[in-house]
Each structure stands twice: as structure tokens, then as C-alpha cells.
Length: 235
Image (cartoon, rainbow, N blue to C red):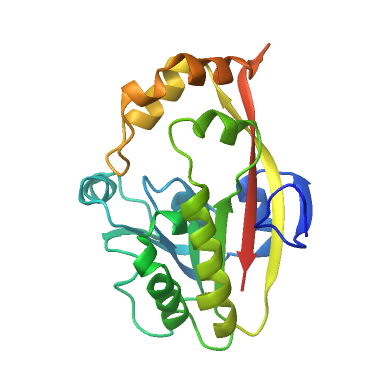
């Protein structure tokens, strides 16, 4: 058992690497049809399309989902509004399903259902499930913890993956990596968290002396830089 995070087990360590580079290492996307569940503003969904995939971004928040649909059209990219436990996708019709920092946002009572949905929509012999979750260690996590400690929901998400995803797939890999996260200043950090409709962060809970001091600890000559540790479960 890795002593950094009780949820990491014996995961392969990829070291310092960017999120999309990890996807590039693990999955060849050209020509694939994939679903990005809980896509938020579609940042990862667009990266999947840039790498040659046909991607559907599914977002349950109605306001963000409408923004996604209203954005400039991109060939191969589609957005829809739906929860992870009820994907608007036919059985066995896609090559892969991604949960990118989103499974722990699924209501706990629906996590198993969301993973079952992923298994339902991927091709039975060749389909894959890619679950990327933040870990509960690192300097980025330390800044968040005073106002948004996600340890309980991330634990539930990991337990759901092991319980509801692993038995449905023949092969499994667990990996970990870390990447830098940069902000220009504290105001940018706060604005980025309070300017979205799919979370309930209040400015008052973030703009506290404790959080600002933790943020200040990330000061470098090139803005404020923190380390985000992540885990990937690939089935």
C-alpha cells in the first residue's frame, strides 16, 4: 500500500506528466467514438477531438450544458445534457467512456449506476473505461481542503470503481501521476471557482486568511504553482 494516499494501492507511477499526455500514452484515440461524462465546459472533450476522436460531452448541469451547445461548432464534437447514470447512448455503440475529475461529483447513490452505464454503452469486446480522479495529497489539495474537503466523496468514488467497474471488464490498470497547476494570482483562483454553475462554492468560504495563506505558499517567479496528484483507473 502506498503511504501517500490510502486510495492509491500499488498503482504504476508515471511521475510528472500532463493530463492529456497520460491519455495519449494509454489510449490511441484516432478514429474512436468516445463519451466524456460530466464534461463541464468541455475542455477534455475538445482535446479528445483534437486527437482524432468523435466525442460526445455529457453534462448534467443545465446551465453549463446549454453553454456547451451554444458554443462554436467543432467537427466531431457533440454536447448533450444528461446525468452519468442515464447516458443518451445506445448499447455497445462507443469505443470508450471517460470520467475526467467527474465521478466523485456523481451523487453517491448513482455512482454504481453511472459506471454500469459506461459498461453498457462501450463495445463488448474492445470498449474501455477511463476514470481520472484527483488524489487527496499535494499542495493543490491543501489549498482546497479548508473550504472543500472532498476526501469522503473521492473515497466513495474509488470504492464504486472497484465494486461496479472492475467486475465488468477483463483487464485493469491503475496509474498515478502529478502535474503542475498555475494561477496568476489569488483573485484568478477565486474567480475560477465561483464563476461556474455546476458547483456551489461561495466567495466568502474561499476568501479567508487561511486559504489565502496556503495559496501564498505557492508563489514562484512565474505566478503561483501547485502540484495536483491524480489517479487513473483504466479498464
